[in-house]
Image (cartoon, rainbow, N blue to C red):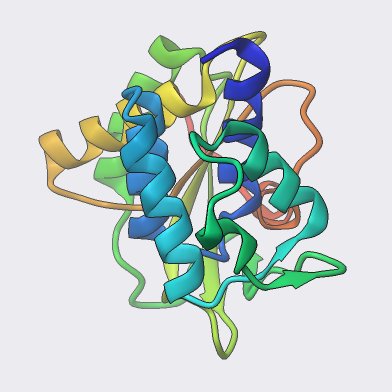
Length: 197
């Protein structure tokens, strides 16, 4: 996969954050990061259809640009809308009383982020609106330096979080200088820095 195609894959995954369920998007990012293109493409198309997630015309063409079969009937049957929907979540700097304690994940991710090109770590609380695909949760935001690989950073950090702590929290990895889709922009705007380990 060439750099332009890989950038399109990365962009589509970022745009679908908050629109596809967390676990589905995590699987997509991990498959693409591992080079499992056919498996990732199938997962993407099946879940967009199953979850009734609409895409914009621009997103449809981005997906077409990297699919193994750009004339796939599954792609052509997706629901297309004029504008991407607003995030189905509200983000805030702190969680409610009784929110799960994020301190172990804070410590691990702050220590690991730099090894994947991270320029610090931020955390925000996500509250769903009606119809959101997932519930309330802590969301981690990792801005990357330079040309660090967003998908590989995501895959590495989420794998370490699970293998070490058996915890799963949404993680958004943001490439330097890239325009942010609404979900990532909202999460970053509300996120507070997590002190370095």
